[in-house]
Length: 582
Image 1 (cartoon, one colour):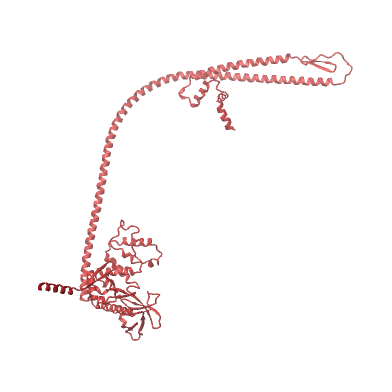
Image 2: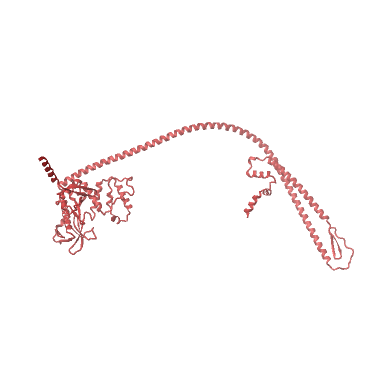
């Protein structure tokens, strides 16, 4: 029983001794962390825990920030965390940010983590168009990975900065990508340091702005940074109207909302201004004290801790440099090995292709040899056939020569017959022409006779119409034999024409016509006989298409004249021809 009571007492004692905790969320520029903090922890306890977790030793630049009623505040190191005016709802949130900025980042920032945290914070605050060119140096540029549009999701510049330049997003991407590719091989910490060196030269670098009023009530801006205090026009945050460097300030103090700056030079008037809230004056004083301490610290010899950090940083940098060189050599060797492998693979593939081509060429050569042998055999056989045909051709030539001799003789005889026929035709034409002239002469004589008859009739008519006189000589004179006789009986006149001459003339014309027809028939028979003899000597293989067509028309009968050929055209053809003409 006593043992059980003792056990319960021991358990109660342990339960009472177990410290109470609360949850804190720490938000950095690229991560979030949560810690269980004891209720009694002060700001320094939580801050040191965060710095140890991050591996950060340059702690004097940073702080834990929170917001009170739209006013920024920083966690105090000597005050309990929960005693600050923060939300008690867990997790309690703080932002781990840079509170003070270095004058020269390359000389003051030792650790790589410190550089990286400043880089992340400034990348959101910067307004310089040159900074995005260093924001991408997280590995080398690779065309197969970094294709067009790979920066579309990256907010490398605020929109207000982009709007200041006559450049499209595509033009920005093109310039940044070209820079990225040009600076291939640059390490991330080197690129971030180049970024910080550019950022620290900007007018608004590390400046905390506060709205104030002077004694006259004029609205102004107070800027607190690593170099001192600056008074700005609210419309111009770049160029201060007046500045107070830290080494020229004797004292800074505030009373309620009034803030006082006393210069070392007593000839310079004390500058007083009013802020909007007392909490703002406290924040201004914190920033002034911290920046002033760092300003004085930079102008003294480095502390032993800083010296050790710089020595370690140099060693670490040298080690990383050696590591990068080793990696670069390995990368170069790997690339060379890959190039060698690719070259060997290419050569192997080329050799395979050449072997395949050689094998195909060999097969083609064998096939060609077989074809040549077969062709040689065929050629030999063709040569024998040609020799045989040559002998036959020689015999045919001798026969043709003999035939040609006979043909020449027959041709000469035919030419002679043709010549005789032409002479005969010429004579017949001349005879026909003579007969035609005689017929014309006879026609002309007949016409003249008829004309004489008409004149005679006219003359007799005139005589018959003259007055009647007593006959002087009743015995008429005899008329010529070729003049037709006539009798005058009373008022009537009758003619007695002699048809002897007309009959004689018609008989002569008919006789001449019969003789002409007989001679023409005889000539046509001679021409047909000559044509038959010539046709027997025609070479059929030399006939043209027109010759064959002419022969077919002749064989169908009806003569070979064009008139007879047209008469044999079918009526349907004439019908369609008539329609076409119409």
